[in-house]
Image 1 (cartoon, rainbow, N blue to C red):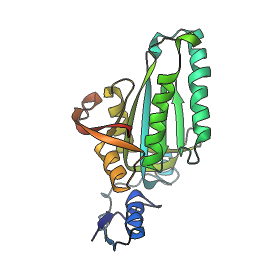
Image 2: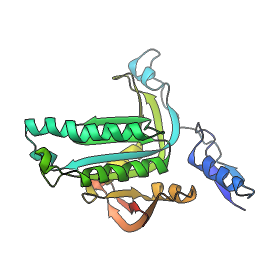
Image 3: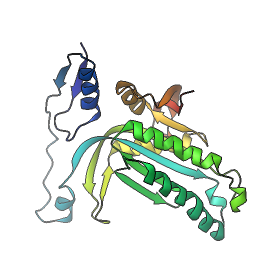
Image 4: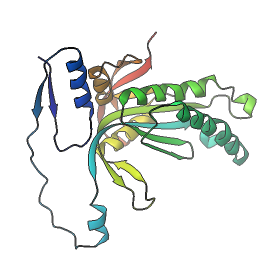
Length: 237
């Protein structure tokens, strides 16, 4: 009998629930084990109405897929070339997003960096591969940009906190798992997509067949963030 463990404090239809539904659809009985509520350590409450008390409100836990991408060779671009990069690469990303029925829940850019959050590992993986393919199939030299422009893309999935960013007023995600995805991106080889064990295991549990996750090994993360079982995400031949 298939067994799934869930955290009842997390909101929404998470990956464990979707995996359980897939099993039920195939005729299996599913045993669901709820994690006991342990609670948070007791901390002194900030004064009512203070910025600290306001920023602590409105957080919701969800399991999401997280993407970080960085453009290799961007630092060599001149101001004129940066404008071409925005037109041809960022414009291409905008067209790619418009093609998706399930758009990213959050999509941010900063110079050469791109950060996105998805509620589906399948959508996140396909989007990551299409990003690298957009970069590899474009004749950048013809657009007066470095011919060797490429992307490093990292994927992770795990519980993150959704909140309204008090600076921008927009929905955003934060937490240790967002940081983990960010630490994988710098050590990803240019032109490739790497994923963590968390991402690969959810993709396997949900029966994703749009791409394969091939084990690379224990990879040291950036900024001395420890070792991570790492997977190479690629199209299935």
